[in-house]
Length: 513
Ligand code: PMP
Figure: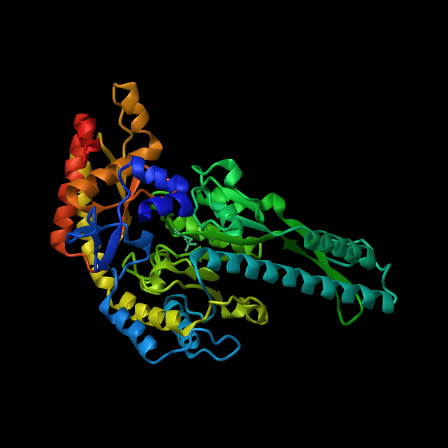
């Protein structure tokens, strides 16, 4: 059996069938910079060089096999750096954590404790878990405080004394405190709630998959994760007040030096964390407006919840700033990074938790066999240097690319709806064609259109694209920071050709390759 057959039988049968049907069952045997080398049909001839705009779905901002990163990887191997050294101090992980804390802290003004993981979804799961623990401990501390207050008023013989001021004025002290205890214990008994946005993508593991809004995934492929609320309306007013009904008012009681009890109101909530990608990648490259991010900050604060920015795809300098959220001025409590953090050579992710929120014993108990390895950490530290050094270049070449694609979109408004994104995180949304033939209408459906465009670009122009995961009429354009102006010309010409064919209704030519 050849690799195609093995893949189809033992690896991903359904995907293999789809690749064959779409003529996208190709194999790449080498990668350098922005190019992949395609294996020729019988493996004998020199392979064709393909310009890779998929860029590892955002993971190869530094291209394939960047020499500076290869050098670090080689040094690790030459030095026989231990890969497995759990239960010891790992210098690579420690240095990477420090660098991440300092780089992100330079814009947010705070320090971070960093939990390293293996994949993007792994970092999302760690964030869900940390926020759950933080939430439970906060409620637990309040419960203890209230129990203590109740014991004191009983001990001091003022349990039946009416509260002198505040929202519970007139009611007996002990009754107010018992009611508060009851409400806290009910909240502690319920699972915490997690919030994410319409069209969010946070990964596919169980918890992350619940936060993800995968409209095109079969319902029964979703496995229930944590309790969850999705915010469909991004208007700041709607976001701020979206979960007001979930808030639970409780009364706290303090006794002054004269022995007189006073009450105050406090709002509790089951919401543990609000997640957002500052630029949504998989849903077709959609920027979340700064006002919506600011409203999410307020929402999280109203609920004493953590605000989590998932910068797994948009961070690491991909948009020209280290964090895509920098320009918004909104500061989150947790940041998630992965993809390009591994420099395209290592699988690694990071959860950054603001120091003041970090649960001290989290890192003792949240462990994973492959997390913290020096090989990935050292590559990631070198990738951080590249990310910082390429920021201006990303903005320059990204602006050029976006401008050129926008010109193409303006020329073919019937074929291209819009070009979206910033820096080197761009998406080109194609309009669904309306061929007269019923057969062609079935071929050019929402799920296939992006792949059909991908086929034409690959076979006619040697350019590799794929659609974004949950918005398949949008083709992702995520090259590396090494992209040259001449590549931009090629990309613009290729999109121009495909958009022209679609616009003129030359569907058979799109399919022909
Ligand atoms: N968050 C975001 C924003 C992503 O784009 C992705 C991957 N596309 C993930 C999380 C999940 O990362 P992984 O595929 O490594 O689990």
